[in-house]
Image (cartoon, rainbow, N blue to C red):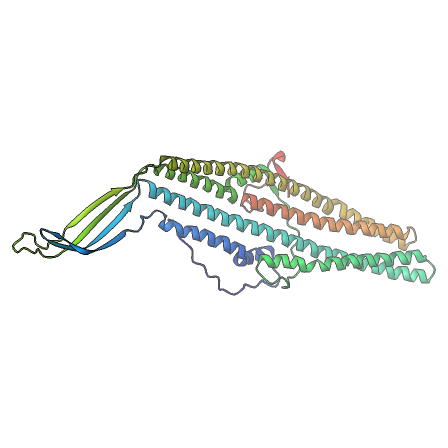
Length: 429
């Protein structure tokens, strides 16, 4: 039998460590998020219902006081006491218990779906915050580089070795980068508020910039993710339990064509006989009673059974529709993961090293007077955009992985069996 879990919501808000990782955010969100707590209590409420769903209804006690005593041979009957118990038709109680159990299991699956969705939202917020922090760092590095160039240009301008247009251009570039940096820094508060909301913390609570390095690459089996999603996804599990619950409801509706029984016993308080010498004088009679309800309105019960069958078919169709939707979402997340992983690898291994070499060569050539300042600025911009694109690709890759882990209800990174499968069945991550 399912058992409720005691929970205490009065504990103080848990604090984050000084340099929290994604797992720290997930742990606090799992303990503090009010939406997850609500799903937990909905599940526990359904568990509580399983304790009485299959029990008999309360017995009925009746008391009758005779305003005018009923005279009998053995004496006047003054009052009576009756106790009766309704007994549902065979199988009704077990079917009601099955209904409640399936409802509780569906509620648990709903709780798991809420937990996984929360973890996905936290991961998305975390990696957006990570991307924002890395972008701030890259823009600051680039701003310092351009400021050093500005000092070089200023000296060259004062000595007549550089034109005024070069000085203006570098100052415009500094202004552009400073504005971009301010825009990024202004985005920190809403990014923190998004993370704090998931952990039930004040939106203005300070959170340090994430210090995690980009995760190592691995291989993700598309075929296995689809199989895991079809087998473990809690949304599908909740709907499967809903189908089973409606099937029990159909069977229960069929039992309504049969009568329920009521058994009882009545005790009558009897006084002594008026005539002396009467045998059994004052003897209190005890009566046994058995009754049944007569289900005459067959049309009502047929309509109730038809409605139950409709609900069962609706639940089955909803399960099929959601299964296709989960498959679509898996494919979309796999595409995003594949595209982001390819771009991150391209930027990290090819474009950023080449852009850095081009920037260094342009700076050397400019200092030697062999290249125009415009070439140096262009090389600097290309390097910065590649850096930002790399960080964006890593963040998008990790958010896609979080979406896949939500759908598959499994931690995919480091999962056994996710080594390099066949080329056509795997995507880089």
